[in-house]
Length: 222
Ligand SMILES: [Zn+2]
Image (tube, rainbow, N blue to C red):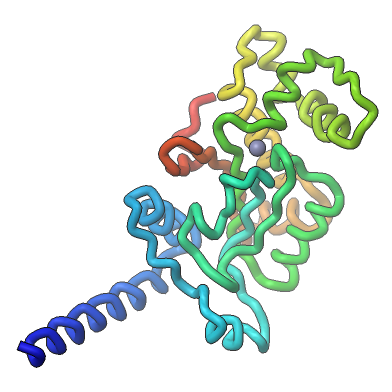
């Protein structure tokens, strides 16, 4: 009986090792998609989370993707995409807005860490987007949240929604993601050139905080 159990455990561990090998052949986007499927199914692998993995990375990091997402506590890229240490270069601000510090961080990941994929990921029910909608162009507090709301207000994509009377939280979240993607594609000097030389891919995504699913660019309704 014990022998049978040991054989079964050996079989399972070989299977999981095979799966792991298979995953390394996936493209960066496929890795994120597959990881999100595991997260949504409630069966995450929690890869690369050990101290041993951290020690392996001592000589240097090689994250396969940059994910620009919201600081919202329900939106950690590593959990949403079932990744671990050294996998994702993560940029997070409320409303996933991108200023100079964030842009410099992304440039570093592309230029020095050789990241080939940048994902700008908004999420449903985003508080920063709600603040923009609720303020109706008149945020009456002298704080730094104002800077975030004004940034979102200034986006061409958001203004088009207002003009077309299509302003809703879902539409504004999508518009904000599209703004981030377009902004990065045109960001000089590093990203614009890398994008046009097809060295990097920049795509948008929206994460649903109710079911955990991430929907990538082409599927996002405008
Ligand atoms: Zn948010």
